[in-house]
Image 1 (tube, rainbow, N blue to C red):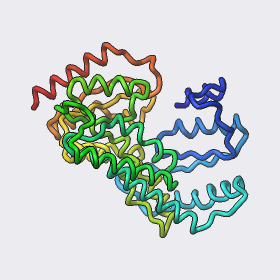
Image 2 (cartoon, helix red, strand yellow):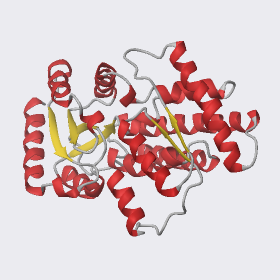
Image 3 (cartoon, one colour):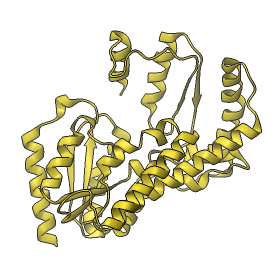
Image 4 (cartoon, rainbow, N blue to C red):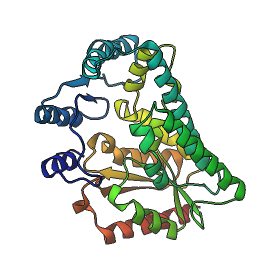
Length: 318
């Protein structure tokens, strides 16, 4: 992402035309430290203010002093900077309204993803990777909730009509980590041809599992809690427990762990995670070595061979 962003800025080339320069930059350390240094470069390049929200890593749960630490940054650093740039004051009413919209959208997103617990699943995780745009970039906007209500209604229609996302769903799989963005279509079609439906992803679910932490009556505290609890700001044990629940809830036959060279925090410990999934959940799991944004590390033939071997493992286990 950093190389793509800086490259597009340097060349002026993007898929959607040149983006306008920012007036204020905001980043958070709850995913990876690279984001902090990336945004420092952007702030220097555009000569604009940068607010960094520092979030302590959670080994078990967020303690009160950690929530207070993040809340103070939001109220004392972010709000004044945003008000100065916007030229107006943030009101409690507006913040509560936005928090309520964010929670509604997150709950709808959770319902959308959970619809794939149905057999046959009405959508794939690859569909989810594309549908997640609004919850990532527009959470808190009424357009997002309206959009996801329509998506949910369409999924329910597909379920009622018995329409699955793929023609022959023989194996149901979990995807761990970011997608391989430049191979979404290819992976989706090749897996479907083998009767594999990737029905769940802990990446897309990251924007759903925090829905109950939003509190319109106390937006700043709930925002602090939400910022503290993304999957990458918690322990490997938390991630493993989440995958275990998804294997049960979605009745999964296997797990694909994308070993992503450009997202080390998400990929850390995946060999041990794979071994524990096999031992504890009793389903096959494979490592897919790739990169979410750099196509130079992708190998079509090698990937196809590994996927075919993985499918054979699932068939032998069934």
